[in-house]
Length: 144
Image 1 (cartoon, rainbow, N blue to C red):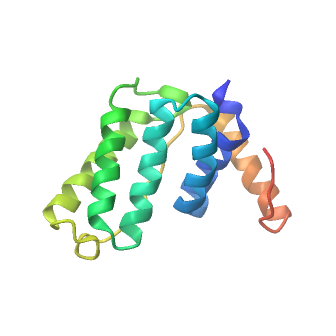
Image 2: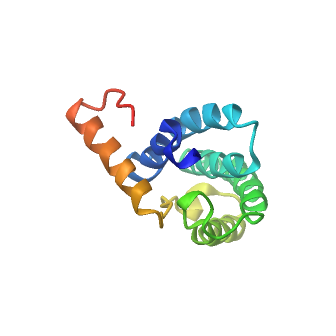
Image 3: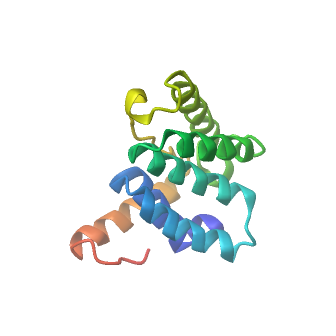
């Protein structure tokens, strides 16, 4: 089951804990390719890359990726993959509105992180355990 995949757990950790959207891209791209380029995984990947672009001042790139992400995420149930996908989708749309109002000027918009909320307690525990292993190992690779 995808929820137990090491790269899925790592993606959630890097997204929610480290806020390392580049690393999110690395682990999710691998997972996305392993799962036949699934559009839901691509949408999650695009959220991370959109935030990466926004953080780095590329408002236009952020808007493009976040728009593509929203288009994909809206096709799935509110609770897909143990995630509160509906909440994430709403936050992505809010982000897009803010970027549009700022005229794609990411600096004027004011970057902020998003959090992917989970409604699956087992998945939340797997992410916490992954975080604990990373802390114990000095942030070295800690397979879930």
